[in-house]
Image (cartoon, rainbow, N blue to C red; front, side, top):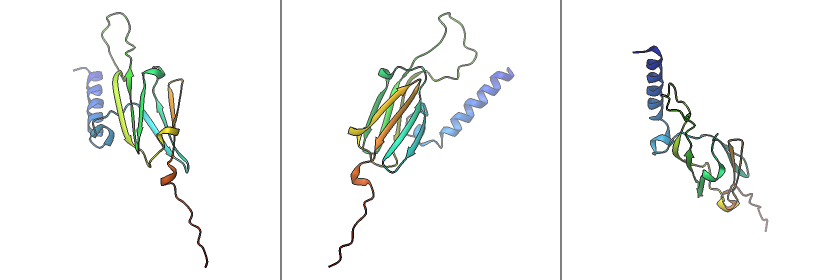
Length: 138
């Protein structure tokens, strides 16, 4: 067995073992695309790295506190029938569903896509924001 092949197999095994503790993969989704999730006082911002995709191939669905991102990453294999020696970039259909840290308003959600970076801004529903209660003195 080639040393390179052994290392590649160990890397695949490590990813499979890591996926046992990944709630996205355990729920049937994939860990692609990579996401950053930030919660502010007025909105949740999600940044996804999705290089090589066209914006019209993405499907974004928001319902309550659930976000679903799906699409298809094209194969960038050379036209010639060459055997791949190493393939690390994701290709094919993907679907990623995650639970947001709070309920958001899907009607006010915005999405920007530039240079392979998707930025979602999801305003927090007014009904779940903390409210200050004024005390009335009689």
